[in-house]
Amino acid sequence: MSARAYEEAARAAARVALAEDLAGYGDLTGSAFPGDGLARVVAREAGVLSGAAAFAATAALVDPGLRVEFAVVDGGRFVAGDAIVTVGGPFAGILAAERTGLNFLCRLSGVATLTAQYVAETAGTSARVAATRKTTPGLRAHEKQAVVHGGGTPHRFGLFDGAMIKDNHVAAAGGVRAAVELVRAGAAHVHVLEVEVDTLAQLDEALDAGATIVLLDNMDTQAVREAVARVAGRALVEVSGGVRLERVRELAEAGVDVISVGALTTRALWLDLGLDMEV
Image (cartoon, rainbow, N blue to C red):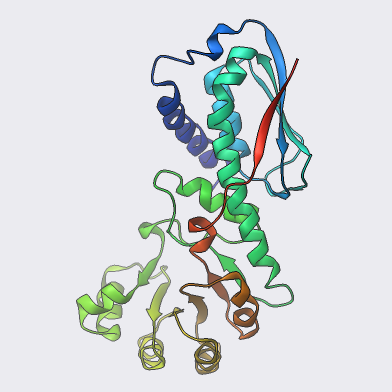
């Protein structure tokens, strides 16, 4: 995703989130406080930052007069006690933007931090850690980018930018080869074709049908090693399915190219970040 597209997505997400919080009536509490002030977002625990664009967009939409300065950039690491961002301007604006801005930072930094932990387990191998389409509705651009900030790769963004044949496609077609033929008939020659398999027999069928990427779904590590040997460089090998942090190393060492992990977005905990007013 381009920087411009990401910024536009940040503004769109911030508008929706602020509509939930302000609902056209504004902040009934914070609007009572006159004058200007300064606030800092401080980390209560260590992590990797993500969500700066959405935080800045939130502040700008609440009050264009708010000044936002980040001391840590997206993808940067911080420890407990670090001041991540400073916000200056009218008290009313700071207070109205506080929760929505923090929601973005806490959620997305949690995704980036968990991703960094997964990526660390692949050190010394050629395996990459990738996200999936298991994202919060409306926040895919941000959660995918948070994975990138954590050192991972976003995988395909949606159904439109990559053909992937999964188990239900195979079931609908009556087999792997039949599914591949149907998709190839409608896809452009420049599109890669990924096929999900859950047995070695399906793997052989996918390779014979000309799959350029094979996704090994829910295979044990020994089966993954056998699959990598069978592929022998004829296709890119991805592995997925309930991948927990403690298993990443052995999968990476089995020789796969990509480890896709739904948990990066479905199991990431919110990071503990707080906004402290200074007067």
